[in-house]
Image (cartoon, rainbow, N blue to C red):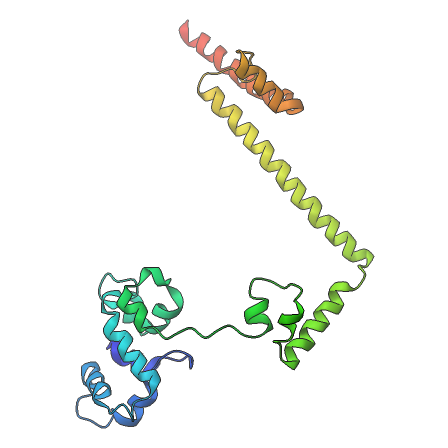
Length: 234
């Protein structure tokens, strides 16, 4: 049933499919099982069978391991989505050499969004601009005009707010990391901030002004633990 679903159900036009071939040549026979339709498609003369269908059949034969139980695309195969899985969802290094060889060659990316802005908008070189069609050039020029437009007061406020938020997050991350290190030292029985030679002096030098707050908190927790231990001995 998986092969029949694939032969009839591949919706994306850019993906290899036997949908048209099945409709034209393989629905009038007596055997409409998945095996029967597959045999019909394979028996078609190459002049009748479409290039997309030929690619599809080659993929089904060459990627048997990937589509079999336990294979990287087995679940997708059972749901009629083997082709999207093999071409779009898994990386080539997850496929066998024979399966990779059967996949259709990827078309070269073209255009402003697919090629030059695929990783984000940026300014283009003159040689890159020459490759754009009229619509893409218009889009690029409008973006460039907006980019070079002087920032309004509201834009500056928004930019300042974003920078401030990022700075506060960075400060909190540093504070949390310092506190976690102090608590870890307490759990291991060490006195945080104690002068035990070079390590103690290095800790004081690296911690700087923040030592007082974090070490004071850590020492308080440590003294509480000492008092509890003393009470337990009586």
